[in-house]
Length: 270
Image 1 (cartoon, rainbow, N blue to C red):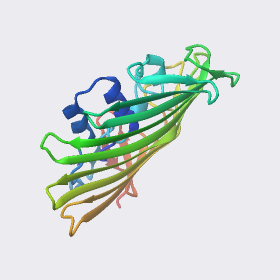
Image 2: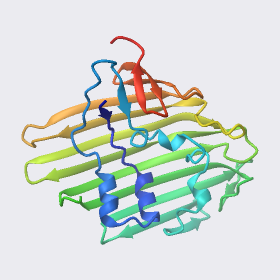
Image 3: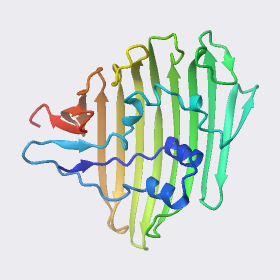
Image 4: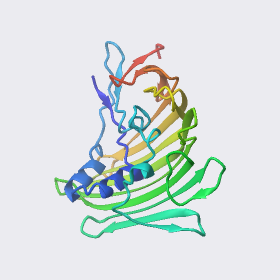
């Protein structure tokens, strides 16, 4: 069965690479892992396709360790970055730059309690909304020595994250653009947008799957010979309903997506 690989690259990935101290080669390899022509052919017998949950931003809202359940500021992942609280702007701004890796990132997060009051630090009981803005740039080479560049930005608003709320919600978007060049002739360019709309999980029942909300992924890929490039457009829409098998639309076709096996089965004969 073939894979549909949307190759998600976001400011979230860049920040985690920096905070975790990922080596130059590994970080760049992660950024460009899928920057090649994808295999978009479906299984001709059952019409099923495989959807990579990580690359499509779906894995981030699944399970007990998702960013919906544990906002990243809570785990102090950005301590390695240079973060300063600005009382005038009511937000904490973080910057990081690595000249040897040619990676730089900018991030800010704003916190408010259940009464809407600004907070300087995260509090498990009182913090109710977390707004995170991120951006990154990367320039370097992959493991094969091919030039690579990537830029991206993201905005995520987490609501109802305090312990007393029944359900928390994520709204936001991640955008990215990357290029990979092989010699003077071949090149891959990719634009990608992931939108999170009302993605909701229960705080009490600790259900594994979001009970509501939509994730929309759109991708434009230009690849091949620079003098005669090919283009590819794909989109993915997943409607969460609290079950393991939400409905999904892949480039206009209707599927039932299994979030465990990552296999989408067609619901209609298109």
